[in-house]
Every structure is written in C-alpha cells, then in structure tokens.
Image (cartoon, rainbow, N blue to C red; front, side, top):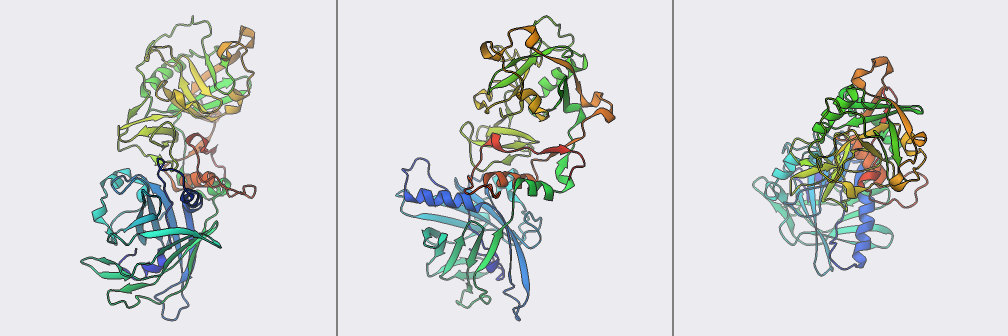
Length: 493
C-alpha cells in the first residue's frame, strides 16, 4: 500500500508487529508471530538509490519507526509507521501508515490491512497524541479494497516473508489511480528489514525504475547509547516544591511527589514536613521483598496543623491533558499501562480511570482499614517485587529518585510483617525537608528523563529488545515495573 507520490513506493520499507488472539488455541502461527513481535518494533535507518534520479547515482537516507498505538476504531492490534528523510521522530514525515492485524478465526491465514495518510495531512509522531488518535477514522485514510490484504509466512533462510500476490490491488481516489502488481515482498531479520516493490499506474506502467531490495538497518538502542544520544531538552529538573529529602545517618534519600495523582496527600505531607514532624522519628518496618515503612512508632506525636484523615487518592480521571506514554506489551492488572510525568501508571481508558502503580521505589501512604485513614504520617517505599495488588487500594504519592539502596539494604525486621522488635533496632530519621526549604548549595542537583520524549521511547525499546553483547535472545516485551526511569546528576553526559 503506497502514497500518491510515486517515489514513496520504494520508501515504504516497513512491516508492522503481529498480533494474535488470546482466546484462540495455540498454533504454529503463534510462534511465528511471537518472533515477529520480538524483532520488528523499533527505529531503523538506511540509504538507497534515489529511484527518481535518472543517472542512478544519488543516494537518499530514510528513517523509520514502527510502534504500537491504541486506536480501537481501526482494530484491536494497530501499529503506526512513520517514514522521513530527516530523523526517526520527524515533525515533517515523508509518509505515515497504519497497519491493522486481523487473524482468520480458523487460524489458517494471517492478514494485514494497511492505511496510508494523505500527503500533508498535518500529523506527526501520532503515537504520542491520544486526542488525535481518538479522532482519526479509517475513512480519512487511503486503503486497498477488501481482498488486497498482505499475507505472511516463514520461509527457509529468512525469519519472515510477507507478500501480496493479487493481480489488481489499487488505490482509486479523486487525486489518482495507482496499482500494485505482484510481487511485493517484505523480508525481516534480526538486524534489518527490507522491501522489493514496483508500483504501476492505472495503465500498468512502472511509476519509477526498480532499485532492487531496499534495506533499513535497526538502529543501535542499548540503554547507555540512548541516554548518551539524548538531548538536554529531554531532561527536566524536579520541582523543588515536590522534591522530598529524607536524611538518615547513612545518607540522603530523594523522592519526587505527584501533584497530578495525589494533590491532597502532597499538601498534608507538606504540612507535616514543614512542621518538622518526621524529624527524630524512625524506620520501623522492613519486610523482605515488600516494603520499608517509617513514621511514629509510639503513635504519640501530635499532627499539629495536618489533617488526621485525607480522602483516598487511589485513582483519578483519565483526562486528555495527561501526557501518557503507553507501554506496548500490555499488563495483567490493567487494560493499559505506561508513564505520566515520570511515574509508572496503569489505567482503564474505557472507564476513564488512571492511577499510579506500585513499582520498586514507589512511595506509598500507609492507612488502616478505612479508605480515608491515610494522611501521610506513615509512609512506605516498595523494596521488592512490584506488589501491584495494592494498586487502587492505597494512595501512591510519588517515587524515589535517589538513595533506594539505603532503604532496600536495611536489616529485615524479625517480627510479624517485618516490624522491628525493639526501639534499638529502629533506624533514626534525622530530618525530612522539601528541596525548596534547603539552601541551593545543599540540594542534590538531579535531572530526570522526561517520559514523553523520543529518548524515553528508545529506553523502552532498548529494554524490551536487549541487544547488548551478552543477550543472545531478546525477550521482545517488558512489564511496567521493569522499565528504568532514568535519573542523573545535572550536567552529567
């Protein structure tokens, strides 16, 4: 499927990730689709001979990205492909396409429907614009008629083949008539994908000369290389009014709190901290593979001006203004998972609800049985495997940015639920302060990679498909709490 511009036919070297039906019985096709899923999503670049250059000596470089998107108006498994001449995440893409995977219920054929955006449609990096995605409709795009889907299969010597062998697949619109004749071939391997394709006009005459197999190589995406290539504008300094320092004898732990998801608890914690309420208290509980918790072990300290009860902030409305970066591999606990403003989140878009998730380093607000009994005077941080069963049952107020080793390496409590049995075992808290109340020279100069950036998308891909020298078999997927959220000292390369 191709655009009206004849040159673009050879530029569209692409193939989307595959999908499968969880309710269907396993079949050999599932293994093929898993291999494709592992290999394909990512960023690619390659140079080809310009098919419109009469002399045949001009080379052009193309950048591609293929990412999953949430667009149920097209189907359940939908992918976005952007092609450009200037950058992987271009603001002026050369072409954009949407692929939809529909599996035959009898599990006999794997088919793909494809859609092409009209030239200069005004979209760019569509996967990051949920409002535009929701508004986009299939009838706004160009597509082949029924019967012209792409079928794929695995063949000897190649990881993957996809071909269109129909005799008369064409676009017909007000602007143009264009046919694609057999043979259209995609080839996908561990390191690249390629296409061999010749477009014909309505009279079956070639629109441009063939340049043979056009290949694009997968861009290197190790975690270190992504951060090294990131731009300064993709990093942010945490707001001092939401950055909390906890000073222990062993050092300082730095937390970032969320005004977007827990504004009332942030306000109450602020009241407690500014009054010095935590100073001189202690860490009272360290439960192995679960949490480290602190507060008033004697329950005798008065709250002062802070509220004794705060309404639960277990979840919030999923509004269109949230800069949501979706994780492509799904989740056990929620229909959608991803990141908002530097925090791991889970949500249900159909219900319009979203919440902070319990991952390693998440800062939670302890409570009793009553939903409104948490007020921020008892706080905990997750030090073990992500206890996602707590999601939407306890308010998550933020996450640790630095110093988690100081909380995770503490001796475990021997009493029930990991509580320390004596005052001598408790770890003293020297003081807690918001960064805004600490002299600038004494602050920790941190910066955080924004989770709505191209580099963070590359971080996700780098960890989904580990291509470090040691990894022989990339997993091809990742869960929410395994995605690293990069933090560094300001000014670090």
